[in-house]
Image 1 (cartoon, rainbow, N blue to C red):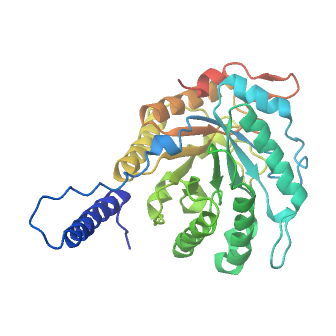
Image 2: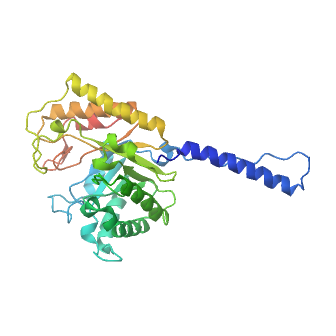
Length: 353
């Protein structure tokens, strides 16, 4: 069932509040026929660009989304946050694995040392005027069965929200990266409602980011039944065409073969189609929109990666969509850890004014 949009909701609230305020004023005057002052209008809904101004974001991944930080060969350093800030990024998406640092039975307590480590990175980023999307990454049980794991998932997010309730306003929550709940759309939508309620117990206005089912593609974004909340952000991920961006990727079964190129008329047409759909979503909804991940693997020649990234940067800028490139290091790197420098040309390909 489709729920009414925030615009429709605010119109209804305005209409009802105006009538009630008028009735109250009339009663206070004893039914007098004398002039009365018009009731004040209700506050307007928040402007999306005010509560979520993210434009140039980079995923800080392959560190805290491992079972333990460092298991993937990289641990976050303070100097990395300095480099990210100086490069012109306004936000990082901090991908964090929580379940390997929490109890497996109620109350599912998250290790204090892990919360403090996440806090340390958040503090280092915000000290550089870089916002942080705290993202729950690689929490596999919830992808298999939402009802069976709902209690633990909500308990952990209550703890995360409580811990960061006094964080700066440019710290955001993304409770569930790339849902994989095939056939569980209704359960996923119900979980989103529960997550908003749990987070709002301690964070009344902190933006919360949600994407569609089946890996947060643009095609599933309209399947989300958005909770009744004024501080939500919609997200989708863009790795199209997959055979190009993931060629030779050893971390997936049956990786596409090497040698695929990008830039044909069909490729450009598909790019237009994705961002036309994104623009249509924005026009129909009041939520800001973020491409939470996009990138191309290191096996691809750098000039081809740059062409692919630049084309997407331009479309996101054209449609006023926030972007978050994948990633700082790893298999889709923008930064060269061995030489402590950005790969040639990548910043110009992703940073926009």
